[in-house]
Image (cartoon, rainbow, N blue to C red; front, side, top):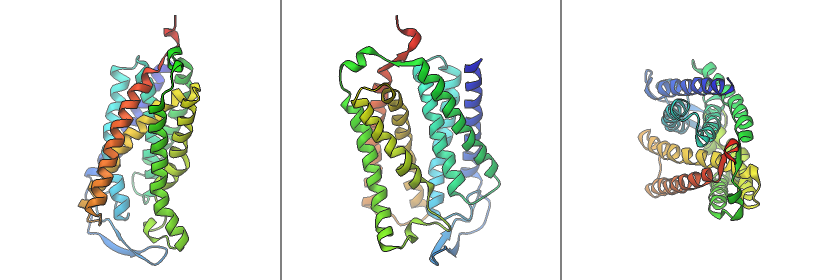
Length: 292
């Protein structure tokens, strides 16, 4: 009964994500872009079409890139519930995906101007948090670390998580710190506020990856169980950032060719390593009832 409730909630959350993502991508009614002043008096060009109208172009490019991942992740989550619901790895990936949806809906709730889908955004945000708690509680009790996993160190997993966390912190800090020093925040702002991505990455995701890397090195069970979840999120963020950069180009946002190529290549490499170590991290775990 408990597993059935989990699967129903997973499917419901996936359907909400797919719905808002499809509308975000393909509902294009509206007018032309307009220029307005933000709270610092600087001009910002606002997108004029679809559900993301009246948001800055940089914000819209981020949401459009994320929407493709929302659709793919929603379809994948439903597939996990139908075809692989009894597999240990599928239960962990569902947990990871529910946390990825927290990220997805948080950006919609806190970065996008209020629109007709606002209540769906809030529903998805709240449901993803509740579902993540339920899945972590249930799955972490049922899944254990193999005894053989602790007989050797896993530097690859720790390095992938630790370096990814530190590099991401470095990227955001290189943008934010100069603005703080200059007391000029125009480049970080849309119309009213900064992107919620900064707070989520710097305050939650990156520290979690670094701490998890340390826990795995110290052979602590919680680190082994959290590593595939964080590696999966890392794997999803890669193509999302690549798509966001592509939308920046199509929306006319000025991005230098070297910066574009460097960003795309770096995240391609990151995705490959995240996928490789995701598979390895799952092999370190097993269901508790499978122990003889």
